[in-house]
Amino acid sequence: MSPTDIEPSEIAKWDPDLTERVMGLLRPLIKGYHRAEIRGLDTFPHGGALVVSNHSGGLFPMDVPVFATGFYERFGYDRPVYTLSHDILLTGPTADFFIRTGFIRANHDNADEALRSGGVVIVFPGGDYDVYRPTFAQHKIDFDGRTGYVRAALNAGVPIVPTVAVGGQESQLFLSRGESLARLLRLDKLMRVKILPISFGFPWGLSAVVPVNVPLPTKIVMQVLPPIDIEAEFGPDPDIDEVDAHVRRTMQRALDELAAERRLPVLG
Image 1 (tube, rainbow, N blue to C red):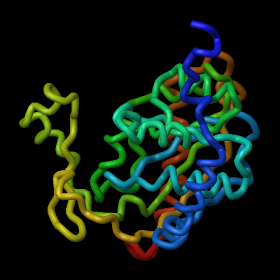
Image 2: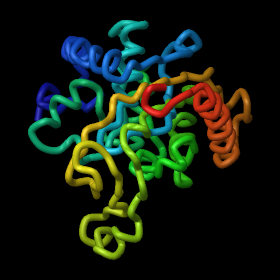
Image 3: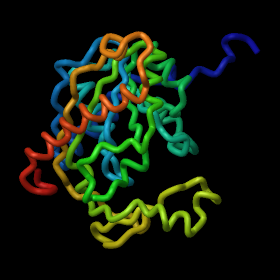
Image 4: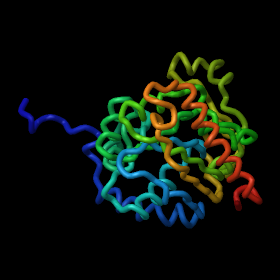
């Protein structure tokens, strides 16, 4: 195989022109339907950065579109925004589209390559555990004990940019992650699925993923916090758990402040 026959990495496939067109289509939804606001981009660092965020919205999370439309609107399309994603999103006929618009498989090699290339990488450490958190815990930062994001930032030598959003978890009423139900149906053994979330929404009412309800037009506000230089704050050999605890405390304070501003569910 000649060098020209080598398959380019997912990071190299990012297409700024396609991404700009997609952002143009998404912006009316984000600004109109969700009346989204993104704050704090004035402190965003230059070069590679790891954006660590809570995750909201169940089957239809808006965190990436809200961040990406705001980021590209402010900084243009010279620096790509990558999102560490589950393999299932990058399987099938739509995989190429998602990869070209910045979605990459969530593994350490991809994260390292994207960050070292100067890209902005978004990670949701809580993943599906976080995105289906019950409504009564909607304003809680909970990564389910996952700390790999700290090591990713350290390995690439980039800052962590904590980011929080409020409103997305009001798109329907999330009742339970359904962990007991998933175990009862042996989904953990059959499909490596640990949750079967139960929610209540429009128009079908009660749902265990299906039937699929339409997200309510909830107002989403996202706050980007000042970057954390891990080595500068914690030394050259930092304790991973200590850094993680600091990041989560910082995010929780900011999320509490956003929640306190909110007057009414959905309306904001």
